[in-house]
Length: 224
Length: 232
Image 1 (cartoon, each protein chain N blue to C red):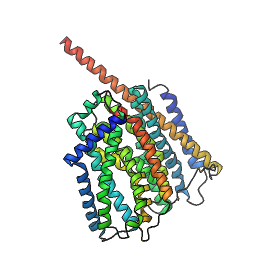
Image 2: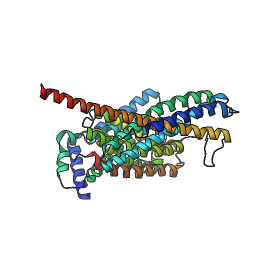
Image 3: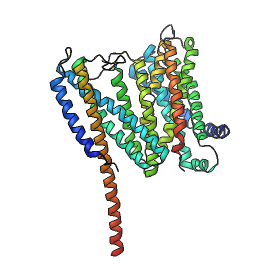
């Protein structure tokens, strides 16, 4: 299964590398949203809960773009039929898609988080970087699992672009609560973490539960 | 198949609902602090409990559908979720009225149960566009079941997460210690929950029976048309 998943993941990443379809669009979107927040809030620099809220809401909205594209090519160009004909474990497709989404998110954050620090963040960014990296990692895992499931669910519907945000955003509210609450004290002047363990447990628990659920139900989304 | 037991359940629901109303208005004492408006508690809380129970039950029926492949379980799950969304609308409206009366605001964000309920409600509202934008009936059933399972598991996670984020101000009517309600209120509350459960089951059976009847009618009609065509 690991080999199949790795092969599909390699294919997805190669396509993304050559077409540059999802990640640049997501990155461009985040920077545009920062500009919108600058004018919408009429603030030059943010700190505390406002900073962590703007960063996390922007990242989640950008993730919607990646999730919408995740299964689009498979459906449109018949890659899925070919996969189903091959004598391989179907769960491998889910693992590969979640891993691809995870890579997209990490690539996005390499651009989007420093851009946020430059454009909007008030307090020093490097003081809190190690904690922030752990939070980003845990949030990305959960987002990748839920995103791959939602993308597969919505791929078969007539209104894919409509269903993905409506389905994904309520599902990631616990993720937003954990990530934004954990990030908020880091973005205050001084930047000491607070209640970090509690929120990291929430993020980890979410990752575990939704990872297992998605693995369990994904097979039923593929046609026989 | 679905109509079995519909009559006794509906009679029981009617009687229990009447008894519950009588108890609420004539037996349960007035709340010393909130007065008459506290009576909305006897409909708001049972409705919320039954709606959440209905969502989770819809998820369990969906598991059954995916395991057995019997599409009648998908229909059961769909009707359970459908009714729970209707009850959920009632929960949000009665909750807002109660919040306005006792806290002075229509909506209170630092109140974890109401906020969690809104998130769950918003998620389940997507069940309709998802279900009805898939045309193939077999695939529609499967996809709806996958949604129902994921969303059913989401309910407890979401309640935990929102509670972590917010200060606790909601009145804990039946807390871990067994409840701080006085005896009369407690009895009334339990009868109200029973009435709401029976009402839910009655409506659920009724809706299933009617769906089955109209499906059968459609089948018979097509057969009749076919026969008329071959005869003519």
